[in-house]
Image (cartoon, rainbow, N blue to C red; front, top):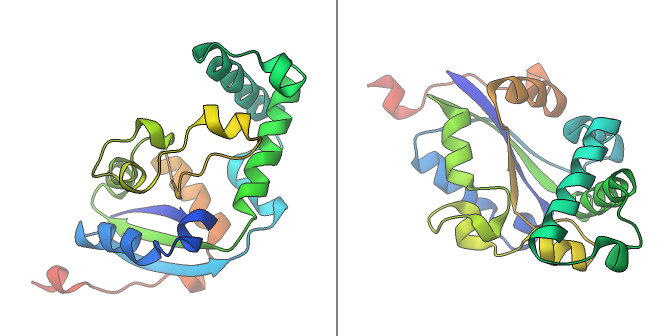
Length: 190
């Protein structure tokens, strides 16, 4: 059975969507094997997102430039620079401010194809592109264009691991072995 990490971000917590989000993956047949509410530290988030690495900073800066190009805007005029590294540093600050703006609920989910199923259930990272029926498609309409203009992180409710390798890394980051529980759901006993 695969395990994957789901983080219900501060906007999901503050909007009272914890139960709704958890209900969706439990209804799908995925099992919660660990869960806790935490206030993430900057160090923890740098490890989680890899935002202490220059390659990540440059990737985020280049994505920001692509967003500005897509919407016919001028990053230098709006943000004071068009240097990918400087833009990446700005985006990292906005992301960390967003994820540290309140508590998050960290959940370790287990089940068949847990990683792929949670990615599908969450919808694309950019809520504006998410289909109705996904968590982001049903509860958020945010986009990088609006977030950049408002100098903040994209409010996208949740994080889900993007691969089995990422899930395995994130599991060790967010949970100790003692916090992970092994039990059978009713349908597993049949």
